[in-house]
Length: 239
Image (cartoon, rainbow, N blue to C red; front, side):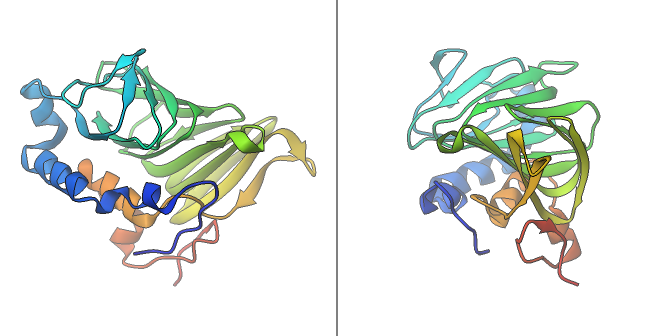
């Protein structure tokens, strides 16, 4: 298991992927054919729901589908894992997000994070965007972790765990290309003339991204390469 640096999160939030019920749910999801089979059989695309969550203001049931266009909110101690199209999501407790509709109900064009945190893995595609209060990220095929730190004046944190991301914060634009966790703080007002500043890999683990990638039959960049970096937020692997 990789070491992970925590800030304002509990260890159990990061180790959700080790829970027996999560492992059983993921194994069943893959064995039953993943999202294509779920759509064909009109089953839910929720892989696992622990605790309470709402969808469009009403309580979310584990057998209820989540579609693009929905707004989701998780309660204290909850954990939500779901798949839409070729993207998978793990939503931390006390989070609120909206899933923007693409060409169909099962295509995500936009993920708007309003509070809390979400880890996500996206297959290749175009015109997909993550929007946070102080950051907009245009994503391609990638794995990312996004979090809003309410106790720091709604400061935004974003980690491009692997892949390519077009980032915009304030009047600053930057292309992030990472093999292994390139992380940033995004501020509402410029710090030393910059809206984006380097960060360490916080509050998420390699194993979480590997788990989410597996749900959509993908592998992370470090799984493919067979090596990792230092999790210092630079985005590079150790050669």
